[in-house]
Length: 454
Image (cartoon, rainbow, N blue to C red):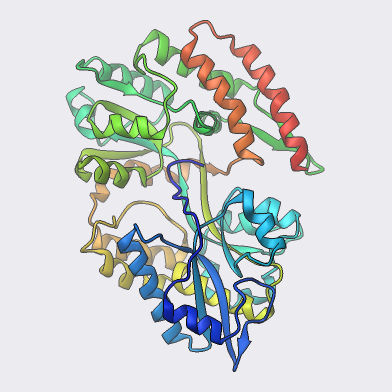
């Protein structure tokens, strides 16, 4: 969910040369055939940036050429587009699903349960970097049977993006941002008191984004939106003390402190616009919101800081790649070689950062952060060497990361977020909203949604 993910649509061939190579090798663009000819394996993959993203697309195309040069027995047939749950089943049934396909962290559990992904466990010995991938990320792609069905290639967790200049003007230390919701509330009051239409804190409440953020609030205060019992069945956990605390904070900032402004029913573009105009103090977001604001509103990276989520936990997510259940062993091996080489390759980090250093691609943001151990240390050292963003502004996020547990989204997240949108909207638009009634109603609706996730 949310601003941290770029959704791309449609499928096109990578380039004429790649397409001709694929045709010569007999690729069908799906997992239905071996794609082998003369010892060459052709695999279709998605994730190719659209032509409008000129730098990213050229980098991708260059990577394909370099990979094929170093892997002469593998050809890449790259398609635009990422995961679209609405068309996924039809593409799989019709033989149009790529051999290696992109997913969000919310997808793997259901895909594994429905047998819509290949078991790649026997081939993981060929992915040495996997030993340093953060275990909590790899668990997303692990089934209840203990088998592995995919690899993570990106991750994010929500924190607090804030305007350092407004913090300074309000007498707050921009190097010591809030670590609790009480401190957030106090800071929001002081920033709002600056006047000139400045708002201390803003939050989303429509188009499923309100439910997404409310889930993060609940996590931060020790609660859950859904839990599993001993049999693995999911049950709603919305009606809780943590949810009440979250909604009470939102109510008080909105109605008692007036530090959230009078305009509500906001979504991502509204809040980013306010931050880009220098009129907003804080909002919940992942690190990648900062370059979006800088580029879209012609701001400077020095203006923004990033703090860890207040409280003890945060909502996180990410992406990765899974494999068509019709893939042959040769295709799985080729796909693993591609994913590892392009996305899970600490040895290529310097080449990647050096190539991006002269562009507007940010280097040195604290996420994605895929690796522990020696791989993690190596990647961070390279980022520090080529950083073109002020990494010191993100220390509050990095320094508290070990204290803030990252929890993934609940099953059927988008349907649940629709329900929780209504809760957020009521609290932020009705001063006398009955929180108990809202949560009891949401509990019943979420239970009904989760009944379909069993």
